[in-house]
Image (cartoon, rainbow over all chains, first blue to last red):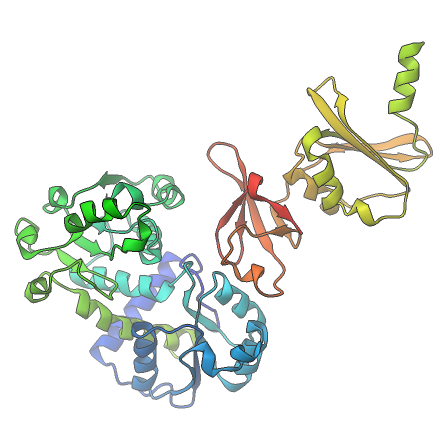
Length: 302
Length: 156
């Protein structure tokens, strides 16, 4: 993987993902390895992001690397009208690797074609966010001991959630069974379901999550945004059916874990946080190990 | 007699050049645009809504002293997959073939996704061409990974 950009979840093979997860496991045991001491990493955030940026910067700092960059486009020459190509070509002169988030779909792929240093896509518009997918895979493997043959439920906005789309696609390589719980208006798009069908796997669709609680190994919650509904009455009707409460977890397997990409608004009641099945804050922590592993592997240090 | 006069008018002979036949009638002007024939100085003849034995109706283009590379001509397969090419030299047909849908196309279709980088900055478009489970031709953007369907194609 040395010097290869990571733009889309389809860029790396199953073996390569598993290799990254293995390195991440090593970083979890020993997170402070000063292997980036002679490296400069650029973090270019053309649109604000708290979690992803802080988690990357934490990963870089823990490995002893130096960080340059900006946290929103208004403080860069983009506000003077510089093209993405020029910004990337310039910053590539100053750094060994570029982590970027950009509001336009496809921006990261374009950047990787004009840059002479590798690019890690930290989110390009509504398109891809592969490091989130990797940390989700890491969290599943860590809590279940394997990525193979799991039953996973996705709950909430399955239509627009890019994290859901990427994770579904990734898990089709691991013989997963998919339980898709969403309001009618926010069902998983058929282009994504096609990946499941093409892999010869099964999916089941529901509008209520209680029926599946005893079958699943992972409950992947997402936020439902009011503005996604054409009819505001419909939002009012459905919103409470997609809020996770402790009581709903009673019949679930003891090994079942709840994941959420965060930020959470109200779709998981705060009382659930203390439930041993809640895993979303550890999941966010895993993002640091996975990003450490990616940096180390792309820079050829692991 | 009357018949042969009509025929003569429809298929006037070309000394050297290319005939593109069997273009769906409603796609003729798009095909002209894709091949950028508005800008050439060679004589160009075209007709549309003409009778066809194979199809209900068809369009046809003839260009004098102009030959196309396969790559160039295959671009029109996106709108006219039935089109056939005839190359003429010294009034004789020297080759005849059907257009082939390319696997990848670059720089002449606009991405349908309004949030795609190619619609904001000077990035040449690039698509993989595929047919879905219902046999419909679609383009997958190399950059934003979104799909542009045949009815949404806009040519640059």
